Amino acid sequence: MKFGLKSFAFVLAFVVAVSMVATSFGTDFFVSSAQAETKIVKVKKKKNIFQVIFGNRKKTTKKTTKKTVKRKRTTKAKTAVAAVEKVENAQTVLVMGDFIASGLADGLKVAYAKNPNVAIVKKTRGSSTIARPDNYDWMSQTAVVVEEVKPSLIVFNIGSSDRQDMKVDGTWLGFDSEEWWTEYRKRVDSLAQVLRSQNVPVLWVGVPSFKYTKMTRDILAFNGIYRDAIEKAGGTFVDIWEGFVDENGKFVYTGSDINGQQVRLRSSDGINLTKAGKRKLAFYVEKPASRFLSIGNSVLANLYRDAPASAFANRPVQDPRLLTKTRVYSFTDPELDGGDYLLGGNSQARVFKEKSPLDNLIQTGQTPVIQTGRVDDFTWKASVGVKKPAVEDVKAEDKSASIRPAALINPITATN
Image 1: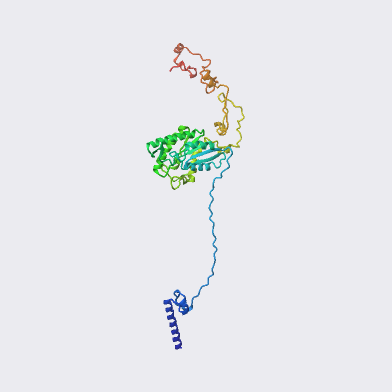
Image 2: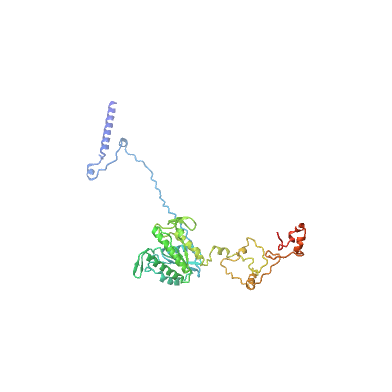
């Protein structure tokens, strides 16, 4: 029995020693010499005592293959304004000018997209200026473009790129010199006259502020020159400056859109306009443009398009100057303020042959006949049956008799 324990201990010690040697050197002792010469010895991971005795037991794990499902990005489609087909005789708004005018034309197309009676035509040159007509001369090309488009209204904008030298009679004038400003005013006046000579209403739109302070200062001076020139020529200047600056008059990237929401109005360069900025620029033009366009698709026209005729539309027309009696009106009666006629209707002026009392008074001196008892009857009528007392009788009467009813005293002879 003792021999068996010693033998077992010896064998166990031998195994432990072999495992320690194998662990320290990490080499494979069981590779044959022939294989060792041709193969590179692989370094195995260190094994602990239990792995040497019992061996490596690999856990059998079930491989689960997961299918990767690619999800498609769901992007919300931008809701664009659906444009309606324009009618054949639609009024044409011609937009001319530089790159700011191009953005203005895009904004106007959105503004009138649902109106079939107004069409926007863009004829712009992005780098065109007044200072350098050698690039594109609006003085000579305006009449050509107007003859081609035949617009009902001209919308013009230019000046964003005019801060450069001008050539006059072979001599270059430096920008911001006194001679430069004098020549520039002359050219603007001439261009305004050319625009108005086309016998079409003209809206000259001002230039917005820009990122750079020096540039903004010059643009303010430009807008003043444009306003004076176009108003002197008989056109209309559209001031859009307040829409693109803050309360202190400084340039802003972000501001209120046409709905009052804070949006990005200018691009990162501080010069170009975003879509919201173009739409806001067009918003300033819509109101003055409506004075020259017959907007048949307006909200008021749609509300009253199928409205019944006024109850008094077919009654005989009487001269209001000759009326002696008037009927009672209700405060909600639309005829009280002329509301029984639609805006834009073909209402003809009423012409009356009979002369009014005012006409007779002015032309012949004939005073009108006043009806007795009416509020405008100011004639004095003496009371009937009252005898005017003589002055001597009044003195002779008793003092108590001087106290008479007020109705018996003639105000002409009465004394205090």
